[in-house]
Length: 77
Image 1 (cartoon, rainbow, N blue to C red):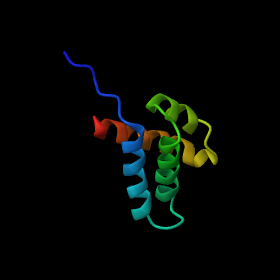
Image 2: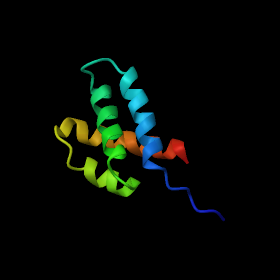
Image 3: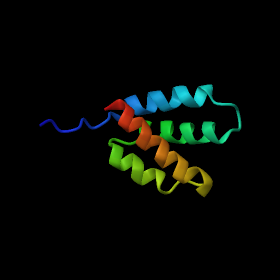
Image 4: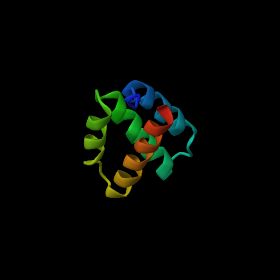
């Protein structure tokens, strides 16, 4: 049995940045993807990124950002 691969934060950051670039200016999608891109680019592990996103403001972006990162990580496995 193999263990699931831990997603690479730089790969996650790249994917999130590409999605942020495609989202409409001023949209929640752009804010969420941009937040995840920056967080993943500046943290070393997926767990650290999740922890940092837990402190994101405004709160309306926090939960969607965490959920977005979780979906990205699953897609990268």
